[in-house]
Amino acid sequence: MGRKAVEKERKELDAKQKKWLKKVLPYFYEHGVRKVTMDEIAIHLNISKATIYNYFQSKEELVEAAVWLKLSDLSIMKEYLFNDELDFIERYYEGVRHFTTNLGGLTTQYLNELKVFFPSCWEPIQLFQNASVENLMEYYSMGIKRGVFSTFNIALMAQQDRLFFDLATDASFLAKHHLSLQIAFEEYFNTKFNGILTKSE
Image 1 (tube, rainbow, N blue to C red):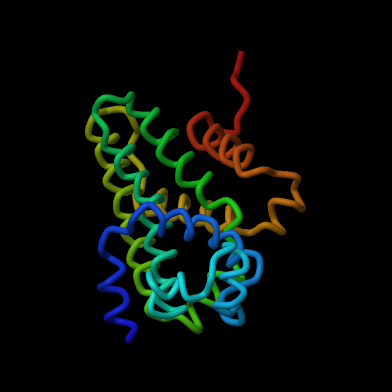
Image 2 (image 1 turned 180 degrees about the vertical axis):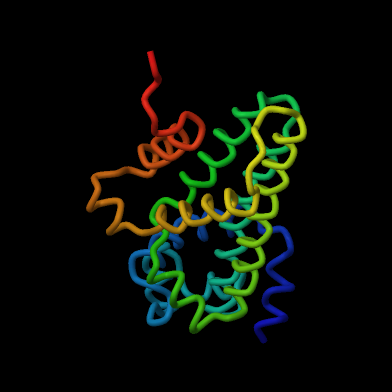
């Protein structure tokens, strides 16, 4: 069933489905996905369960569709990174800012439950994570070749970005250090491109 659902949900979602999924994602972030029932989802969306089943054959299919919608949104980072109409550093700023901002609300509980109980959802997430790292490596490599960046280990730099993305989904870390996602990104961006050393006079 999992494979069929993934293949089906790769198809374009209509506006109504996207609206529902965008509303249900924060509910999943807060409550997880394992124990949430279709009745609870219907109440949250203020529609009947029968209406949901007209569009999604099962809870698993709905969860998978929500994952694909989120990954589709996050994938816009790639468009920024390789947009020749933008300044080279602006590409990173806008792309990674978009990526980070759209991680907002996503929780480790949600991700862990997907990994354990919805493996058909976790596989595309892993593939997407790996593809994102490769895109960042390509961006850094291009910057080195163009003389924008000095030479450095692009794999190490891209993995550093991935670690930052992981922290961006850790609500307890952000709260402990009084960070919003926007402030966390700005701090990360400024440190990456401006360094931590004071300017010598």
